[in-house]
Structure formats: structure tokens, C-alpha cells
Image (cartoon, rainbow, N blue to C red; front, side):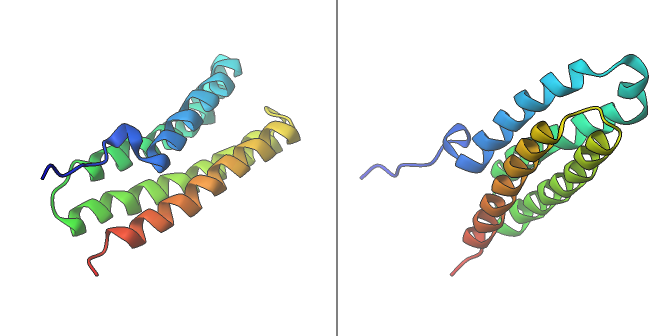
Length: 122
């Protein structure tokens, strides 16, 4: 009997993080050079780090090792919320774009928490 394994690209929380990275890149590209330097680079790094940590954790064998990277992803997600708020407060994105970003981040947050919980042995 063949076991079926879920591929990384089939993992919903990972796909959501990729979509967020693509959406956030459009925001990042709209920033001026100085804004990118001052806070934009940290914003896009934190966004991209969510998916990167999920991917790295997915590739680990032991559940404790995996979960460590998923916690790192969650930390990056919370950092991304911070940078998103600064983008809004500094009037670099509209309230509508901010609300969309926040909704996407919150959806990933819930999905990531659920996935972390599922990784623990029963």
C-alpha cells in the first residue's frame, strides 16, 4: 500500500504565505528608495520569512525541530503585522490595503496555529 504524503506546495498555510508574499511585493515595489531602505526592506523580509520558515520546518524530520521553525514563522508573522501598521500610519498604504493585509495575516496566523497543534504527537 502506497502512503500518500502532502507536498509542501499542497499545504494550505504555505500557499497562503506565498500569496501574501506576492501581494506584499507589489506594495514594496511602490515604495520610494528611502522608504524601502528605512522600513520597507524589513517589511518584505518579515513577510517572506513566514513562508521560508514554514518550508524549512516542513523539511525537518523530528516534530520538535519542525515546530521550532513554525514558531519562527509565527514570530515573523507578528513582526509583519508591526511593519504593516507602520506602513499605514506613515500613509504609505491606504486603510483598505492595510485591512486586506491584516486579514491575510490573521488568516495565516490561525492556520499556522492549527498546523502547529497538529504537528504534536497524539
